Amino acid sequence: MSSGVLPACIELLDALTIDCVNGLQGEVFPGGADAVLIFAVDGNYEQAVNGDVDRIEQIAREAGAVAVRAASSAQESERIWEARRAVSPALARRRPNKLGEDVCIPVGGTLSGEHGIGVLKKQSWNSISARMRLR
Image (cartoon, rainbow, N blue to C red; front, side, top):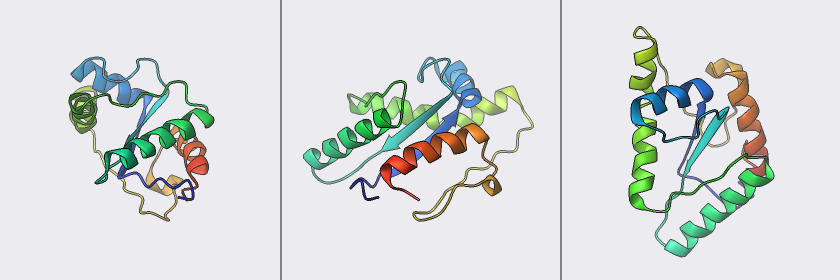
């Protein structure tokens, strides 16, 4: 958090999830990506929010992100979050008996195997969180 940015939300999607969501919602996320991080920022002042978005983009690039894209409109942002909300139904189409669990890591918490995350997710999170000084 020493980066000065406190995202309202961070979502991490792995390759299987991306493929399933794109199959249900159309090409929302880059096909063939190993993982996608979705950040949400909020605030009362447009200039401050835009500054947070710019800082997150910079941190992601420094962490080795292959591509970084910020929503250019409220409609594009809603399409991304609609796709995120479609994760469970998209995965259920592949495995109808899937038992899903969404995990929330509180600020100051840690991400570990006990949360049932995949190795790729942990590596991706560790890379980006180190740059943002999140723990």
